[in-house]
Image 1 (tube, rainbow, N blue to C red):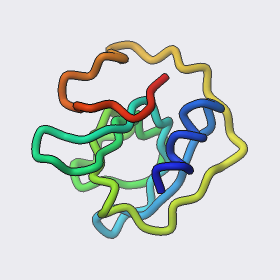
Image 2: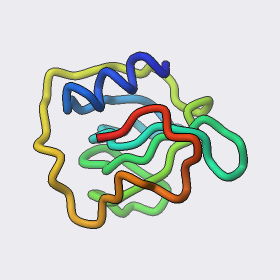
Image 3: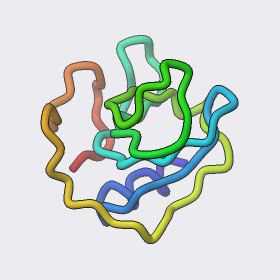
Length: 97
């Protein structure tokens, strides 16, 4: 999954996946290891559902919990407020925008 996530970040393409039983569409921004030691993705959820019901919104996703990951053809400009490419919640960072 790391290759698909990093490709999506580099090409600025949205991804879709299931997470906690919900379909999600995300603009991926930063992929790395969380402080808890889990492979994670920082992304901006633009569509789908979430437990909090807040969409759109920034989220941190655990990669192991992502199912049916798909790279879409939908591009984004990467200009979201509050994005920090030096995400302190992820270290090391594998790829970012």
